[in-house]
Image 1 (cartoon, rainbow, N blue to C red):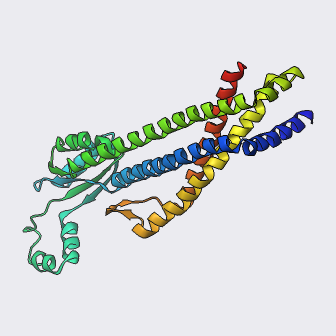
Image 2: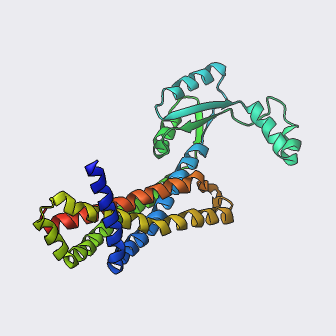
Amino acid sequence: MKNVRILFRNIRDGLKNVFRNFSLSLASISCITVTLIIVAVSLVGSLNVENFTKLISDDFTIVAFVDNSADEESEGKIREQLEKIGNIESINYNNKTEIAEEMKQSSETFNSVISSWSEDENPLNDTFLIKVKDLEKIDKTAEKIKNIEGIEIVKYGEGMVDSMVSIFNLVKKILIVIVVGLVLVTAFLIVNTIKITIFSRQEEIEIKRLVGASNFSIKQPFVIEGLIIGILGSIVPIIVTIYGYTAIYDKSGGKLFSQFIKLVKPFPFVFYISIVLVVIGVFVGMLGSNRAVKKYLKI
C-alpha cells in the first residue's frame, strides 16, 4: 500500500514538474511531436509499400505456354514437374478451347474471328497459370519452368517485376532507417533537455538526498515526467495520422498512381499506427529521462 501511495505521489510530482518547468517541457514535447509526425509518415509509407508488394505478388502470374504438340499425358507430366518447384503457390491449367471461348466473350471482333476457326485450326496454346510464393525469386522460378520439357514460352513481365520489387524494398529500408534514426536523435535531445531540468532543481534533489531518499525515489518522478512528455508529444501526431491519412485515402479513392497500387484502408490501420506512436513517444520520453538522471546523478 505504501508503494502505491509513493507511486501516485511521484505521478503527481511528475505532472507538476511538467507544468512547473513548462518552457523546458515544451521543448521536449515539441521535439517528440515533430519526430513522431515524421515517424508516422515513414510508418504509413513503409506499411503501404509492403502492401503494394503483397498486392503485386498476389496479382502477378507466370504464364507458361504448352507446346502444341503436347498431348494429355505430356500435360500431366508437366504439372508433376511444376509441383516439384519449391516457390510455386498455385497452378491452374487452361486449354486452348477454354481460352478461345474467353476471348470470344471479351470482344465482338474476337468473337467474329474465333468463331470461324475449327478445333484443328485453333492456333492458341494450352497454358499453365502459375502464382509464386516469393516474388523476389520469380525470375529463378521462371527459368526452372522454361527448362521443363513441353513448355514452349514463359512470360511474367520480366524486368518490370524485378524493378518494382527492388524499388519497393529500397524505399522500405530507407523509411525504417529514418524511423530508427529519428527515435535515437529525439532520445538524445530529451536527455539534454532533462539534464537542464535536473540542473535547475539541484537544490531540491540535494534536500531529498539529505533526508535519506533512495536513488529510485529521486529518479522515479523524472522518469514519470518523461512518460507524460511522451504522451503529450504523441497527441498531435496521432490527430495528424488519423485525419490526414483518412483524407488522403478518401481523396485518392484508395489508389495511388494506378489501379495496381492500392492504399491500406484507414480503419483500423490508423489506430494501429496511433498505438505505435504512443508507445514510441512513451519509450523515448522515459528512456531519455532515465539516461539523463543516471548520467547526471551518477545513479
